[in-house]
Length: 260
Image (cartoon, rainbow, N blue to C red; front, side):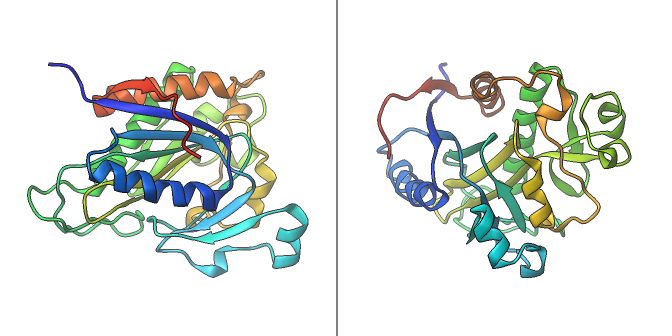
């Protein structure tokens, strides 16, 4: 039996609000059966986003500093606290239908929630774990060992890996560092929005403007820190799309339609 189709669209660098609006339109089309499951891969200009568990005190730069650096701020409807998006970061927004969900409590501090739509119970936390697995497989293909941490969302680089890398910050050689953040929403029809952000070759200085994910003890690391020559974004996109298809059991097809 053939796998269901998932279309992949590369959008380039797009303002956050533009893609947030696009996700709403595509989710409606997927829910009505007018569009196959879709994966958007893109970059954003400098942006801080707060999820449903966001705390304003985790925004450290004042309005003047943000204006000087060209940083937008958005409060959105995904799970989790605050994160950063910017050039050199691969952002992925899966717009895919999950099986019907029923409410179940999410672990404290994980920034996830479940949506009640009736039928069989599929927890959003399981969807998030699959996203982590797809990112871990992608990074393994690039030669970097990463993993999950119990009680925390995202993909992490352990200190023993960072201790051998050429450009890693000192803090990453002492405690696990986050290389990919995840924050999702599943709407009442069981269709996903928002997704993940993988630091590829990002200006890490912008992370100083927030307490990322509300975690003061979790440094953030960049894929470029781990290589003398960082991989091209196109290479990372291709490996990510392949890993996503393997984990979610989709046949991935690169879309040609102009979405914006």
